[in-house]
Amino acid sequence: MQIFLYIFFATLSYYGFLGILLPQEQRRITWSTLKILPFKVWAIIAGIIGYFLFQTAEFFAAAWIIYFLSVLIFIDAVLLFFVPGKKIKEMVRFWLLLPNNAIKLISFFYLLMAVSLFLFFQKSF
Image (tube, rainbow, N blue to C red; front, side, top):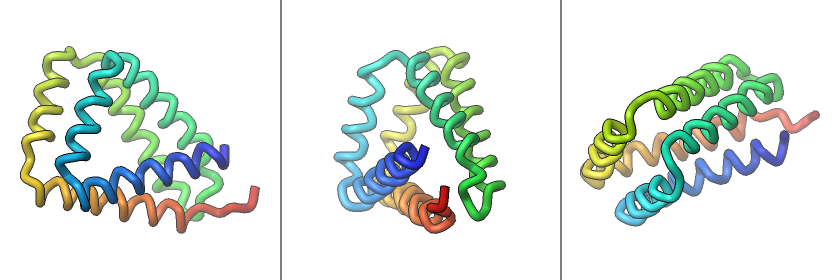
């Protein structure tokens, strides 16, 4: 489980730095990643991530934040699974058309969240 958390922190940090430094590259990676697999598979992956976060919440100093985040991820997974693909593509296109400053602000939030979660993480298993 500890390795999963470190991978989660690293991925969130990478995505945050990428959006701050190269928002166009982040858009390209996001779009190409979403095209690789069907949205239902992404829903299952998001559900698994939400489940693992829920299971590891006790290892954090502020477990309620992790419970809340895992519930949000699980809701996202349910929406990805049940919302039609055409509607999801419209939402992704809306995100991809945001101005660079909005992408940088959202990416700063990702980075801030990754650092906060890492600091809340208690490494004693």
